[in-house]
Length: 413
Image 1 (tube, rainbow, N blue to C red):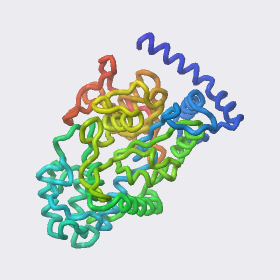
Image 2: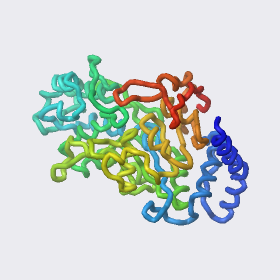
Image 3: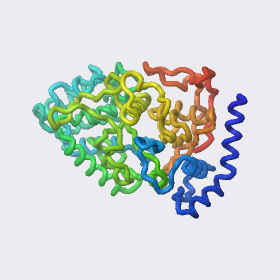
Image 4: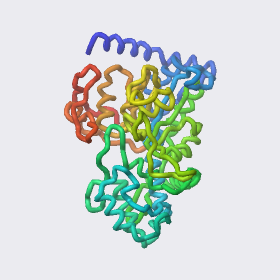
């Protein structure tokens, strides 16, 4: 460990040693702090409270435009348990809301010829172009199963890769595909679909499953009370709290409203429109077709929140979020950009967990998921496969100084 790292860690520990008393003083003065909850691991709650006390403004309303500190949250499996994109996808398949495209290849610029051919064979004769495909009926079971296979496994039922030719650090085509499959509907329609799917998934028992085509799929989502409390506490202390998600923006807005995050503070997958109708054409960021995934999340935040333009939006901004929370390798860039605290919910994602456990600057906080924690993972192969290459390969994970991150043991689960 370098001398600088030793000094930094010492300062952090000194801060933590007094943060419990400081939090008590803040609470006594009416400043909101995180509720005591057994879901918080170790001293994570105290450290987050200390950050809020240091950077926040008790009772103020926060906006980045007025200098407020920015806090960013991923949504799926970070703020809620399970995936609202999946919940919406299963709902639209069960309710026959996907319109027959003129050409399946046009539903995603990254869809492989094999996947387009499989979808054409399974779905192409079930309805006229522009009309809903009856995926919720027995006649549409084969089409539903092909859609589910591609969406869940990123492969056709015959095992062919469904997407290719994309930058794996900036894209996850299957997540964008959900919104692209809704081409022809309006944003209001998509909001209605998401609202219905949300209610179904909240009403379902924890652990419930549903039939989609001939397959059995997860049928429930739950808000994490601890994250709801964290968001509210940050807002009550003057932080500008926003969501950055790889799910469709219109879908995330429906869910985020219930934790007090307004639509203008939600960033998700966007597409261009023909009039008021959704299209398959993805929006751009940093001068290229983009979606908020990994480095694409950084781009979206830099462009939309901090006003950076062009390719510079993919670079780390000098002024950026103080707090980030995520659970997957698709979150590693924006969470790592946070300057004060980085909360990681452990879902055994290699690159994210390697960064978090290496904890080079002492600002990473690892917590088990608040519902259904993951089992202990085998050691993470950080030194050989810790970094996701743009072409989909893996390489050694390195610190900013070029040093290779050693393999890490799973310690918080």
